[in-house]
Structures are given as C-alpha cells and as structure tokens.
Length: 534
Image (cartoon, rainbow, N blue to C red; front, side, top):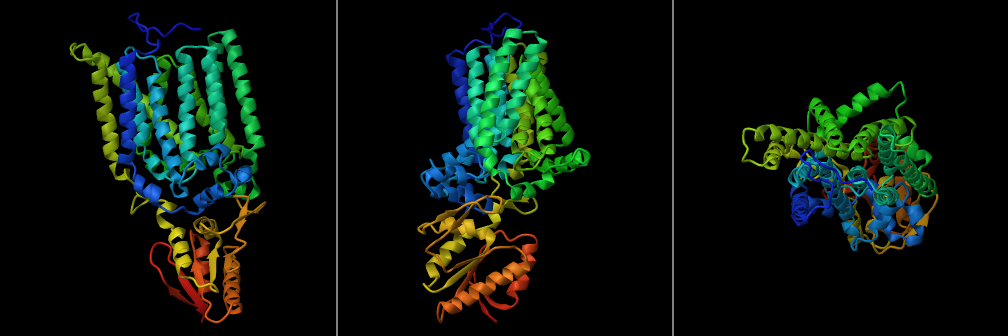
C-alpha cells in the first residue's frame, strides 16, 4: 500500500477524513441534490406521456422478466431491469432523474478526491465540480426515458474512482474500480468507451513512474474488466445492433476524411446546451486537466485526455455515434465536471495569493467565493434553461412536449363503440399498446425495425396500424380501416390516432386524408380525429 498523500506543510491529505470533513461532505452533497428539483421541472418530467422512443422502453416492463434479453433491445439490460423496480409504470422517468442525481454525486467525488492542502478546499472543489454538472443546460433536455443520464453518471463515476485509486493505492481499490466497470456496463454501453481510458491512464502513469509491480496489477485488472465488457457486449448488448439501427445513426458515423468538417458542425450544434463560449470551454477544460495533474491525479488527467480520442475512434469505426446530443451526453457532462475543476483549481491558487494580503481570511473561504462568483455568472447566463418544460419557443423543444399518444388512447378507449375501428400511424403503436393498460399483449420477434421486436394485441382486431410512412402506405392503411368499418356493421366509426408525424410523413398524411371526410374531435398537440368516406 502506498503512503497517504502528503502536502507541502507535512500534513497528510490522503488519510481517511475525520468526523468534521465527513459532515461537510454530507452537507454539501445534500445541498446540491436539493437543487435538483429546483432547477428541473420534475412535475412535468414525471407527468408527461411517453413518446415514441420512450414508449417501447416503457412497454418492455409489461412483459415477463424472461423476455428481458429481447425487450431490452438497444437499452442496457441493467437499465431495463431497474425500470421494473419502479412501482408505477407512469413514473419510470424516476430512474432517469436518479441517475442525474448520481452524476452530481460522482462529480463531487471527483473534485473532492484530489490532493488538496485542506479538507475545506476539497469540499469547495467537489462542490464546484458538482455544481458545473448540475447547472449544465444539456441536463435540462435529458428528461427522457433513455439511458443517457446513466451514461453520464457512469462516465464521471469511473473517473472519480480512478482519482480515488490514485489517492491511496491498494489492490482493493483497484478491484473496486474493476467491479464498478463491470456493473456500469450493465446500465451504460459507454462504459466500454470510458473504461479503456481509465485503465489506460493508470497504465501510462505507472509505466512512466517505472512502478512495474503496480503496472502488472493494473494490467491484470484492466484485462479482467475487458473480459467482462466483452462478455456483456457480445452476449447481451450486441443484440440491439441491427441494420435499421445502423442506418438510423449513419449520419453520426463520419469517415476519416469527413472528420474535420463533421466535428466542426457537431460542436457548433452542441454549444447552445453547453452554455458557454467555445474558447471559455476550452480554457476551462485545459485548466481542469492541469488541476488533476497538479493535485496528484495524473492518471485521471490522462483518462480525460483519452476520452475524446476513444470516442472519435469508435465513431469513425461505426461502433458508437459521435458527438450526437443524446448519445454523447456523457461527454458533455464529463466536460462540465472537468470544467468545474478548471474553476476550482485556479480559484484555489488565487486564494493562496490573496491570503498573503488577507492573512485572517481562510483560503478555502476565498476559493469558495471565487467559485461562487464564476459559477453564479454561468448560472445567470443560462437561467432561461432552468426548469425547462420541454418546449420553450425560441430556445429548444423536445419530443416529450409535442407528443401525447396517452390522451388520444384514453379518449378513444372511453368513446369508441364495440364495432368501431381505430387506425394509427406506425409511431403511435408502441405508445397505444402501453396506454391500453388492460389489453393482452403478445411479443413478436424478430421485427425489422430499430427496436427489433413488435407487439400484437390478440383481442383487438379493430386496430389497423399503417406500416409505412409514404403516401401509398398511408392510403392503403386508411382504405383498409374504412373497409373494415364497413364490414363490422352500420354505424361503425373510424378513429384516427397519430403521433410523432415528422418529415415527409406530414405530406403523406395530408395527401391521403384529402380523399376523406375528417372531423377533429379533441384538441391538444396530437388530436384525435374521426374519418369517413367523402
């Protein structure tokens, strides 16, 4: 075991904290977590209906546990399992919110675990790191029922564990890192991106220091983690990769020659949810990485530098989308955590200089004041993002706020007659099936869409799902629905439900419906209509 870190005055910094620092840490983390429901519109987040990409995830909890390897699809297996622990299926986004909180805690741990001269400065650094993650505008648009907040929590958590391993070296800590990587892979696919960076940083630093025994220990731990990652990926996660999925993300798999232009476009697209000018972000990332190095965590610093390199490699290799807002959310949150260190590190140095003229003021207090001013300015500049409800004109909107298949499904369920027919577009089907809460479902696999599975309602022969998005498919679906209504007897009505109609499908429906009499019967963002022959 390596001796505890030692500061310049001879005091130990790496020793286990006493009761007072533990109290400070607990208070700081609790205060930060209390800000989560203040900054986020939790009521809207939990109350909004599930949209297309969420609906199939939510629907997966209605199938037996034995179907989980299939129904998890492109979601990590552990993520899908955690959803089953939520008592009310309408509250599944609690898992999303929980991982947002875990990312804040992990960021605090990252900042706190550096070699600071006093516990007070460590608390300030941890709070600055966590506050940067908490205030990041990109967090406001990740309220959806997907694993992206878990990606962020795992990424920052692994970096924090690397710093923790460096704090006081032991095989036990290295084993904890390995176990965390294995567990992380079950809830986040990006663990396979972050883990090589983590172990790569530890390997490089121990090799440079010629700590050969330690190098072997890291290599063995990294190999064990790699075997677990490989087993989970090829045994479980690989099932979520299919041709439609690859085609869907094709625009985020740049070639080598396309890379410079692609990176410039994507970074420009992401800057609004970063919430700071590009040059400021770069300066803070450099300062944060140097802070890791200067405060005794060089392996963590190397891991931070490796992360964009590995992410770019897997993007060019068409393994994982590169710099896409959702799938690269973990990069944005990790960057925010490092930028938080880029605030805390210089603030601590500035406090040392100021204390020469203000000897009665504690450096930690001055550092905290500097961090509060800088992060307060960041929060003020991004105040229009906080408590984002999903649709702010002139700012941003998410699909959560502009789709509502729940209201349509429930309205039709209340008003349809036994011989009525319901027709809907393909994108409404998963949500319709989920919100038809008492209907019997049958899993259909395989299926040729990005999800890889479909669902049937054996007891609902009255439902017609339009299989395609073009005019011909929509016309065929409407014709089938009207003919089916005629077969089911006089007075049978045809109810129309549509959800997430975008792109060319908008024109397809407009052209197809021109041949029918259409009566809108509800309001809202996705109204229900009744159709009949013109």
